[in-house]
Length: 205
Length: 200
Image (tube, rainbow over all chains, first blue to last red; front, side, top):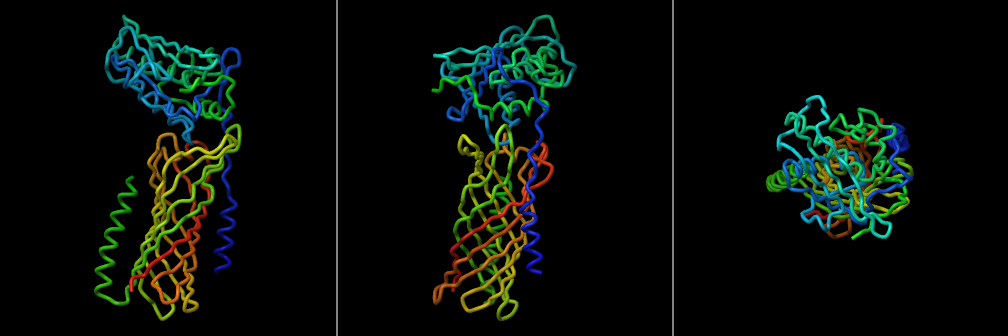
């Protein structure tokens, strides 16, 4: 009886589940092969969101969305009060109603862009700009602004594939984002990025 | 945190009950101990490179309430507690993921083989609680699982103190890991060394 129990434990102990297949992914490199991720040494990454309309709420939701794509806390961010000492700035302009998003069909009622500033060849700050367009229904603008904020935050985390090569409409990082949640490919790609040696460093604090 | 609260409530109720029971019946034995637990790895992953997720050696404690079945055999209800840091290890070093608490209520059968030595076997459940869920293996909720174990207890002559060495095993898996593509759970082994005390 005792021998059977020990044998069962030993057999069970040898059973190590295989690592998941993460082959469903897309390129994360920048236009000239840049690989960038925020290093452990400055986490949580400070994210400042302009206090305008739904921007702070959208930024927090987008941050949680991206943090939850990781399994081992490779990335952590925090909403930061001071734009001058934040690593990521999220700016909002144009017409943006402060209403909750819903599941309506996506309409291109906004636009976004992400750029970064360098300090001696190292990334000092990521700057995200989201703009709501006039002339669209309030709900369409609100939905578009959230999708775009989450998409641009993905770029700010290091998904520098600015041409969106290899993405499709089910991915948050599709060029014209149609969804407001991360896909399997988004998840796999950001995980792979945060275990890849960067060739573009963060400036640090 | 839910599990911690539940565990604390159960522990408090049990301690209160055990004290009351001990007053009623001299055959009831109360015991408690503190020590250290070491864990085998919880997750093996590969993202560009090999990643091992495990626990740092953590503090261990237990409380138990037992009663003899005969002159050499006893049965007890035991609540084990362990608090430790979950960490990921890869080529770049080790990083903290979360602080994890594990409660393990179990039923223990003990057999004395000499005046100072007894062996025991246990079956119960392990309940995890973590201070972090977002972006961790606990992102879909903290798991619980059946646990089996055994150990040896060495009584120190003429002192109400004993040394207990315990090993146990359970299957570790979370809904977060399964959602990420892990198709099965992994067996996790723990070894605890505790110094215990039995009120005379």
